Every structure is written in C-alpha cells, then in structure tokens.
Image 1 (cartoon, rainbow, N blue to C red):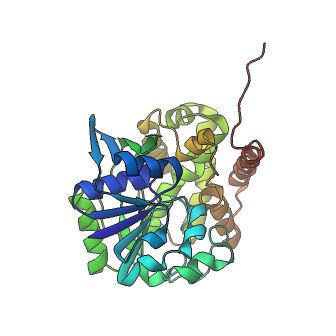
Image 2: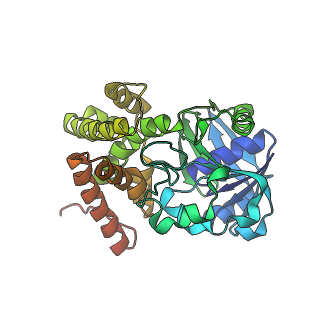
Amino acid sequence: MKVCIVGAGAIGGYVAAKLSLAGSALSVVVRGANLAAVRANGLTLREAGEERVVKSIVATDKISDLDVQDMVILAMKAHQVTAVAEQLAPLLGPETTIVTMQNGIPFWYFQKHGGEFDGRRVESVDPGGIITDHIPIERIIGCVVYPACEMVAPGVIQHIEGNRFPVGELDGAETPRVKAIAELFKNAGLKSPVLTKIRDEIWLKLWGNLTFNPISALTQATLVDICQFPPSRALAASMMTEAQTIANKLGVEFRVSLEKRIAGAEGVGKHKTSMLQDVEAGRALEIDALVGSVMELGRLTQTPTPHIEAVYACTSLLAKMLRESGGRLAISKAN
C-alpha cells in the first residue's frame, strides 16, 4: 500500500518506520532538522532494545512533491491540521483514505454522529470550518493513538510502551476499507482493533490527555509523579469526572473506571507527556484540542467544568509566556 504520513514526529515517525519495515511504500512530510536527518540517514527506530534504520522512506517538506496515495495519515498535532488541510489535494485519488491520529476531540467529532448535534462543527479545533471545508468527511477513518514515543534526536524515535491504534468509521460501519487498514497495521506489528464506537475510545484516551498533559506541562512532572502526589491525583480525578459527565450526555460509555484509567497512567512510569515535551522544546502547546474542546462541549451540554477551566487558564498563560520568551522558560536558582 502507498502511504503518506504528514507529520513524522514521535508518533508519525514510529508509524512510518513500522509500516515501512512491513513493506509499505512510505513517504513522510516533515520539516527542519527532522527532514534533513531522514534524508541523510533514514529514520531510526529504537524499540525493545533494538535499533533499526529505515532508509527507503521518501521525505519532503512539500506535499506538492508527492502524488496520489492509497492512504494519508495525519499525524501532526491538532492545531497544525488547519495549515495543511488546503494542501492535501495532490495526495487524494478517488479511493484515498485519510486516517486522523490527533489527540483530543477531533474536528470531525459530530460528523456522522447521528445525535442531537449531528453535523455541528467543533469551533475550538476547526475555527471557521477550514478543515471540514477541505477534507471530505467521506474519506476519514478515526484512529486513537495509545503508544508512548519520544523523538530523542532528529530522525530518531524511541518507542517507550504500547502499540495500540484502534480504528473506526465515523458512523460505526465495519467497512472493507477500515478492515484493510486494521490489517495493514496488524501486519506491521501494531494492534488495531476495528471499533464500532470510535468516539467512546476517543474519550477514554482523552480522559488522560485532558488531565495529565496540562498538569505535566505546568509542573514538569511525569505521569507517575502526578499520579502518586495526592493533590495532583485528586485534581486529575476532578477534571476527569467533569469530562465523563459531558461524554455521558453525548452518549459515550466508558469501558474502564476512572481509578483504573489513572492507575494505567501511573503504570507508564517516568514518561513525559507530549505537552511537557513541547514545553521543553519550545513548541506550541496542544491546548484547544485537549482542553478547550472539552470546555466547548461542556457549554454545549450545559455541564459545569470549573476544574478544567482553571487548568485551561493556567496552561494558556504558560503558552503565552512561551511565545513571548521565544519558546524558552527557565527557573533560575537563587544565589
């Protein structure tokens, strides 16, 4: 299968390496030092004590350099999708599928939803409808990303744990194309069950991203640090309770308990969340997809979200300070 991954950071790079090693014809759209590294040395994957270098991947920073693909994977952060939505046309043939791998509430959340808010746009992740205007909903397959990975150097991906990428049609249908994607991922050594309720899985993952990502960004704490410190664990639980109320009103069912979800995060150990990694690298923070969107759905369902709003305010201020400082904040030791 001919596959293009737009955004080959930690997760996109991991998927690119796995699919390429399994025989897919891979191209990646990347920028800066990462682009230079992949072009010069290939993509390096460190996993389970082994290091493998994939040199067959085509790397470019211009989507227009590529032609029609069988599948396009959008693996950049949610706030970066708007910038590429208008550029995807050269990659799209009559049967091209687009797999979205963003954390948080996706731009397509209410498309083919079937509920009271069917067809409604989530303004916090698709302001002005630019994404939905340029990415046909019929092409989209939802995907939830569970692995933890880090880009330890340009073109070098360190896999930490997990290999689950559940996929699903937006309307829950078990179509030949979603089964083919699941099989492709499976053949690459990934776990990819086909779900008939992909939004349930989105909320289960978001439960953690909504809470642990901003708390870690604000405190520089790892997952296990947050979960084992009673005040931060309680804050996370309060935010998760508010989110669960919203999700339940939208017809979502959680297959695990809140405490089990927290315990799962604790079990990951000393892992830095993606938002903390972004703070350390001076990158823009993924606040609206992970936190702002939940507040928007809270207003939509008339659900109070005081704990979520407080953390959103603090994290937004952190993002502002990062922008104003040129992407670097430091705590100086007293003399």
